[in-house]
Image (cartoon, rainbow, N blue to C red; front, side, top):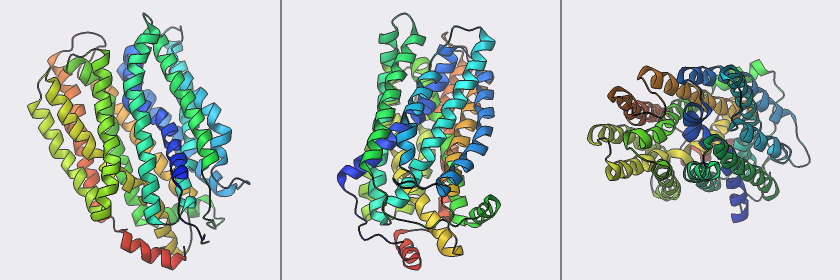
Length: 446
């Protein structure tokens, strides 16, 4: 159904962006901190942590499609998606706080606690993220407004990531004093509270104005329709490979700063923060570039460029080369994230593409599937980092061997660079440009 007013106010875009800031309290923690937290603070062995990341992803295979179906089935007076932010904001915050709490248990008890809390935060993450990434599809059908809103969204997401990367390590050290575990609990507790309040703000400042009729189809039929949507399956692969590369690099940035560059807590936080600051600047840069240049071309060529920058960083930076490391990591992180606004607006367009091609709309499962791809990528990457750290002989809080330093450097540069190159190559098959999407809109009368 077509709505007369497709324009979004600045306040609504800010409110929409605030939701991704809330989501990124978890995502940034998983990308940047949790691997270091589990090994160097919580006290898990890298290989045990790797198994945790892998096994919990099996739960996502069930919860993600179920949450997608739930958003299709239930509509309230607030709409199809917004009410989840109101009712689940507090449980979401609690789950984050508990995940970064270190209990005084023996090793087996800690393993059980880690599994329980990681499963809890994963389920809560699913319960708010799928409604959130679906929200843009009912806020407006204007592709320019979607792209603009996603620019705000990703800007606020990076602000949250910046806070997690810069503030949490320093705050944990200051609040914990001689108890770093207590410091991380308090620092992430503050981040959790911020996420809770931001979700409530999103609820009150956004509006669902586009009504899509969702066909009442069995799950198997929806899945078959989804698999036939070549543009959606392509984005699934793009999300999976891109997330693996992004998380591997982000997870070891703090290890790289501490052990390869020889930095203290302030160096660790500012190095991670440099990458996030570059990503923040990439958001407005992406919006500007896509006004004058094809968004699909920008997407694929920037990801190919990441491979070259990663190789350069691996070969020319030596242990302790602080300035050069900061400069190249900034450039790398900037180029990596230029694609982000395009990707998140592309998902909603791929849903419309499938609707136009088949006459049947699969919305909730589409967004749930992308969320699963993202979390599957996080699980694969987290497990890979754990097994690689173990394989290269990493030992927490000691001077690392040359082999361990080599492994950390590879995980920051070449290994994730390969995944970004694959991501760029996949986008050569993506065809929904702005002009193509206009034909889809005409066909669907939106």
